[in-house]
Image 1 (cartoon, rainbow, N blue to C red):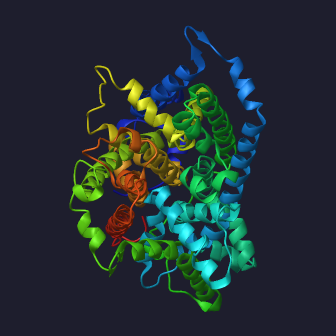
Image 2: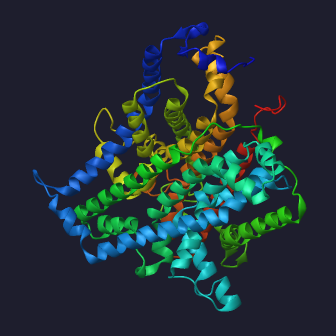
Image 3: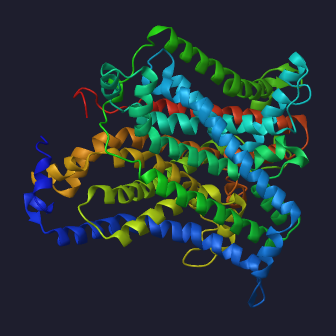
Length: 586
């Protein structure tokens, strides 16, 4: 299909209808509003039913005493000195972790987006593996590196456990892939000739990058920073294991108040504080980032990657490889080494034990190895749900940028929903898990014994990644291409297939990779709803680590190694699913 003369739609004084008929601007606005509402119907229903309802129910139980509400307790809890200290530490460590992650990961995003070198696909998969590991496993691995008797202690006598530096480094370890894949996905599709044109006109390399490339990347960088901040703001396992008693985040305190102190009212207040903080951050993000979004010229990524040129690019590639080796590969290597280090020396003792339920000392009703197949099934189902819901939401959020006219109020509602989509990343997983148990227990939604409950909980975390990955690309598509296709007679479905899909399918694959990886490693909510006869890999690892004995610990390390391999293989296969490049530019 040939797309020509996009200015036709602009000169028409309205919007194009079927077979090129022009619609009056008022009817076009109504049609656009109806299409946007149809796209939002499923995402709104999904989040209302499986997020807002469970969370509101459990918070309501914590704030109610009989038939009366105890709103006065909110001020009492927030004013407590210990809670103020928790709030301050939660905020500043999240800001520090986000800044440090961007500083370290942005060079990696450039290398994977613009440089071509042997082992590139393997490197991309390796940096994504930490994102799926249970936090308890990563905390143990970092203790082996940074704690008493760890690598730094043996080499230089330096210990970083129970310090904030251990927490910050572990957060970078987790979130490096968020920046690399979110920013790199868009960076790989930016036309490098625009930056080259600026240099021809006299701009230096850095000036051209700052004035041309950086503004184009700003929405993707902001989206990555937002996701990193939300994950570190709600950090639980890393802080609990590496921070010791001196450091506590809101997430750790909510867990302590819920599971240990059994004070649901205090936990409910802290959950509301999380809502308020995350909601404010999302509102600021929605207002500031949207002003910087413009239509971009997107090209085939195969045309932008090249071999390293000059000493500077080779040095950058070397520094990124060294960073990945020290920060990501070293903790992963510790896990692999411990999985083979059995009682009688190195061997497969722990892996053989995974085939028997008796070897776990009654921890499981089935052999722990079955958790691998359970996790794959759950992750595939969760990825399908997240892609469906997230793609519809992203298309609806990008719609105001492409439709002619539209009511300002409707636009504000859509932008508000854009912020709400990120709330699952900023709400305690403990709250979501308990909420599922107390709300989805009656017909027609009695899902407590259904296998679909776990994928639904996992998809809640996957949807924001799908939206944040696809939205910058969708909003970067020139609206005149769609309008020109409509003028030439293309139906809305054909416009999507011929115009949008070729441009966004790479982002769709990146989003699928994120959703699959997040589903594989989701632990906080899954631990409350996974059945004993169908555990996932993270749940199985946590349960093994929670029992004493060398055999249980070794099986946990073996399952963690299997989890890493499954994730790496899946991501390698996904990265090889490339769009057809034979046609040149998209």
